[in-house]
Image 1: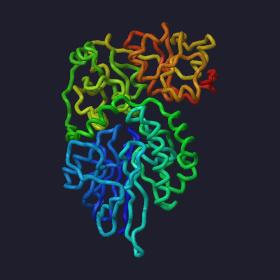
Image 2 (image 1 turned 90 degrees about the vertical axis):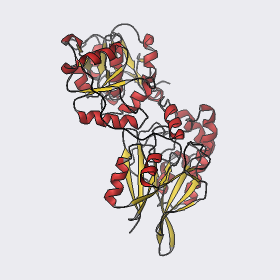
Image 3 (image 1 turned 30 degrees about the horizontal axis):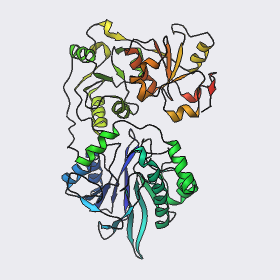
Image 4 (image 1 turned 135 degrees about the vertical axis):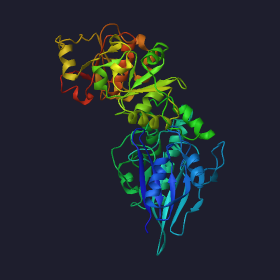
Length: 466
């Protein structure tokens, strides 16, 4: 049977894991922490997992490698130079991993995303010998870009960018143009130096479109460093957890909280997170809660903004949504929510006065308001707040807007001008979180729930100066 490569997608974090098998034995590459998905996929394919390989020590998620190896008895392969507090099989550049008589891996040192990063060439046995099918590139060569080089500290970013350029060239020299590229990051992950919408790629395609091949080393380094923006604060914690060896996942239901307990948690300043869509949140929500819908990268933004280790309570319409949120959160190291409640806002409130609404508008409404004609029942904007990240702001922003990136908002509330503030992002998701934070600080706020791409056509004047 031919070698198969199955993709296990974690779209909320912008990552992929891989199950590589020959019909009998399988290798798992860069597994997420909730390994039941991997075990299910292996069971469906009727293959035995014999090897678990990690391309690098991850920062953007807690790895499932330790637990998967424990459950399956597989060999757990990691770079020999990575210092970890658990047993694993050390791997060096050039090592060959014989999985079976039809499948093997070859380790290739590809530093750049980290110093000890390894990529794994996947070879299949043919009548003429071993033939490369592709390469699992982790955070090295991605679709149309490469992994970011500053996660180990800004002081390492320049040197690692140089190495990233060299590493990509090495993979291109080792593989034919038709070889598949299977990266772990790059599908919305903040581990990526850029973004691409490509569903798949090959070495040949990357040679045509990827800046790492189109630019000389010095130009690539300059462009890469210039494009780096902020990344989630929780990366500092997940990297340490992965080096220490993550504990097994506990996805059992957490304790329920009644209305009185929710009120106490909010009064204590704890994060009580409403997982419903922002439109439902705007119609009615429990005062003091935070809007982080399951329809977006909830765990990324919660992990970025909440004080690490602080209690988090989850609110949702159904137990299934709470379970989905728990799964998302364990992937970044938030293991057990403090409490949860399901149902509707009227069930979470002790009395009707504890319920709130949120003003909602779109960019046509903002354009009208800026010309002195705000829609009925909406306050005229005294300020427009843009909570997108720095690169988004520099690309284009509303003329006269105030820029406070969302990760900075909790500590920069004083920088938001007095009066009614209309807040926007690129889609409305982050703006809903920002609006809930502002409302909880007793600010008069309007959520602009619209795509920023619609702003100019709606009559909102943009500025494109740096």
